Length: 299
Image 1 (cartoon, rainbow, N blue to C red):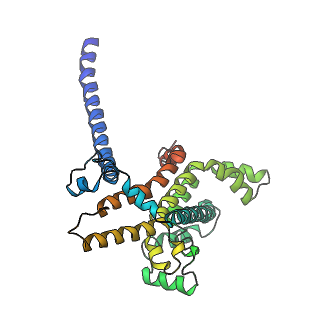
Image 2: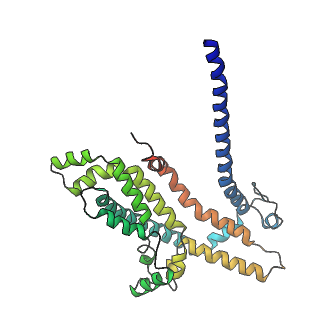
Image 3: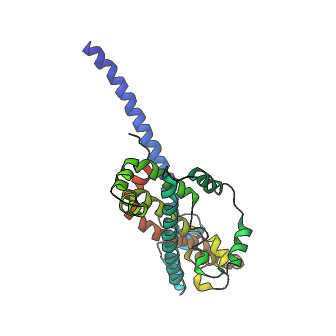
């Protein structure tokens, strides 16, 4: 009997190993699809124009040079644009987290009357919105044109992040814990700051990363709202204009050898704009993984 049992267990284990290997192979392939394009862009940004024009750059720089980065930093206003982007991202993330927490906490409490109706109203805004023209008219009527607040206030609240925060608070904060705090005389603000927020660090770090990355990569609103105050242009918009100017000059002088190929400049712009937000991710990676997994397992 033992021999028979052993003989049937071996093929079963082999099948499990095959599936594990297949799953790992699929994950590796998907990871490469995400990583290789970025490596290709970095290689182009560090390659000379002649190799890029000849399409000889793939995953390793050819004719190594940092001329494209020197041309980016040659613009005296590039550092100010970086400073504006950092300030806007910090203000945007801070305000977004305050609004999200203040809305998610009461909506996650069962004793709050009308919470389902209010949640539906927030959910409704995820599918229907006024559009770009009403948004522009609203910003103009409020006198926020050419101000830093036009980049901070309009999108500082996300209904999607609110629903994530609300679901997290509902599933991770036991009702009995809140009731025991009430017995000890704690009010809503004491419960929020002393119990809820310390236990919600993973989801808060995750949503803060969502807010920061979304604001850092956005430039369309700055393109609409920052018209005359060029000193308030964020990094993404500044680099957008830089690429446009390089592309136009390249098209006008296509018959001549260019010192700065727009493709190289575009690649260096992408790397330059991506590195700052990549440097933030390692510090919140631990909380980010916990926040994503939060609520995935029910006990």
